[in-house]
Image 1: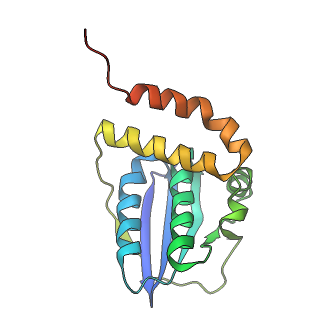
Image 2: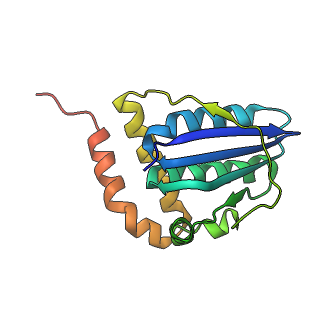
Length: 167
């Protein structure tokens, strides 16, 4: 497996985020910071997420992508485009209900971008815990199947987050 990596390109307010290799929790801090900067940019008009070189994607990363779509719909009133040529990854996306929050395509002909690499940022354990919890809550909000699939995990994460009582 190829280590996870994030690249991005921007042209006339359209952002292209390319997720490569193992797209896992370790990339989420960097990805979240990139999304925040993108949504704060006054020229922001649309976003494309390219998973054409992604080998795997974990549920925390899926939750962050769902958050991206929800934010895009609020800010620019459109669903982002998600490029997913791999049937195994597309199957996961569809099982999570992503067809309702993204425009999913297999390929975009003629797409040429000059990408910039995004450095992977270190996170504290508390920060990671909060991101995992938020990502899974976001996935749960998409549909009933996700609610059933992730409710036990979210309950466990919420219990772990509560401060211990001292005697």
